[in-house]
Image 1: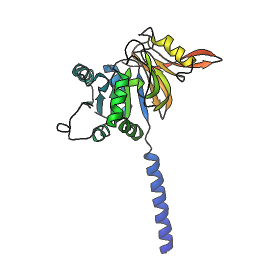
Image 2: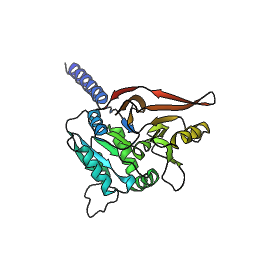
Image 3: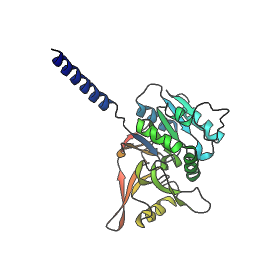
Length: 255
């Protein structure tokens, strides 16, 4: 009788453990859009969290924690069913009682702003924020952003972070492709992206117009969304020695 009870108990524990493992597997989600944050994009991020009144944190590192950028963030969030936060990178121990990890891993979503991608990546690495973002990604916290805030999640792409010319920058590589934001709004972006891919300086990747965005889940393309019917996203690669620009269907217009 004791042996039977022990077997039943052991079986129950095993099945319980299996259930917890299945439920505990987080979906890794990135929402990359081509330009700056807008109220429409923030509304969409809220839906991605699948939570009521989610905590969403803004990282303005690429503009050096610029006050105007932070004010624009709060304006974009005004009236939305969310709790907006800001995580500055230019901080002091005397004024910040929590670590970057404690703050960021308590969020439901993290949005990265535009600006100087190269400087942002250097600061993140120095502060260990890059490692925290990887933990957030694996935890299932929604990651997103536009411009530098979209480029940062990919292997790399072209940036205006240096004087004179657009140049290549290496990024976090959560999505193992290249990326081009501002695809049609800045005339030099598209031809340079084509040339870099054709010459092998960049891998194939995703190009996004300012008012469009792409959702990735577990490093796989899921869908393209847009604010209007003129904005799109593309997959750019080399086929038979020539650039192949594949238009990705827009599945949802964000209101």
